[in-house]
Image 1 (cartoon, rainbow, N blue to C red):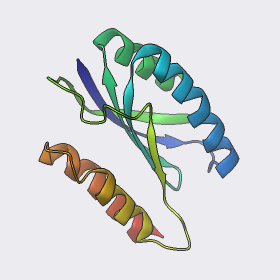
Image 2 (image 1 turned 60 degrees about the vertical axis):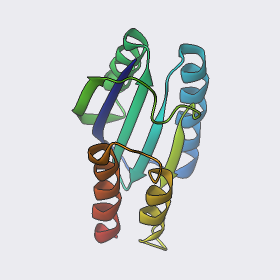
Image 3 (image 1 turned 30 degrees about the vertical axis):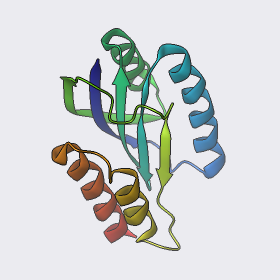
Image 4 (image 1 turned 180 degrees about the vertical axis):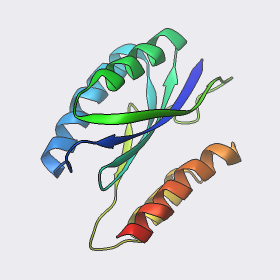
Length: 135
């Protein structure tokens, strides 16, 4: 089992419809490939964790990295894990809402509440906090 966490930047600010389309395709592909995870977006920045069989996680990340809609993909962590942290989600998702800067912080706090890996939990919470400050 493998876990990969990365951050990237969209070339253009995605609208809600674009994000829903990306999520829809991702969820189908992830269910097929046995990949689970969490995606958090704030403005044009994305933070995502992918988990599953090593070859499938790597193939998923390669597909993501080749997508021309974004750039500056940076892997934050890539490691073997004993069990999934986000095991029941084909891809859970939370988007910052510009009308309430703290909404994403609260959503991410709740989504990561059961995460025992404090470093992973901190990556997502810090991302949410920084995006709330930018709003």
